View 1: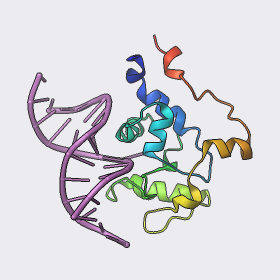
View 2: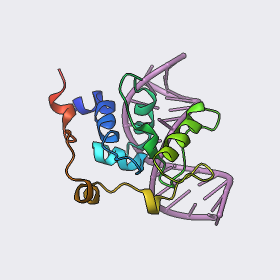
View 3: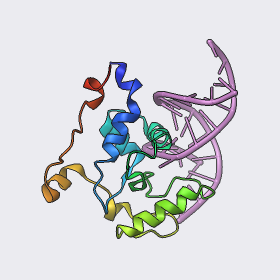
View 4: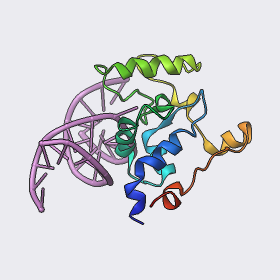
Length: 128
DNA sequence: CGTGTGACTGACC
DNA sequence: AGGTCAGCCACAC
């Protein structure tokens, strides 16, 4: 289905929205969950092009090493750091401890209960 | 249609 | 523990 490609940002936003507060996910992880095995960079692109209209927990997305991937020159870099700390996520030297804060969807369901949103194939039926 | 670029990643050195 | 490099995908020129 090439339609998935057209709305790739849509499914990525949806997946990012699924990250619970106090947890973080890597770009690669989001990409995989959204259906893009090697689309780590797409996640960054999708978040970058995300309209401010939608409230997206974009700050819960860091790179595989737990480091904030946004350029330090970008104001959003500190913004992300600020938002993470607001959720009790320890941020030191622009990075978080993935061993502690990494999001595990399965485990999360067990602890927080099943998600109340569509996380699968939204791009397939939401297209025109 | 070729090139460069980026909020990436994993393998190597 | 850090720097490099090729692979990755969509998009701007």
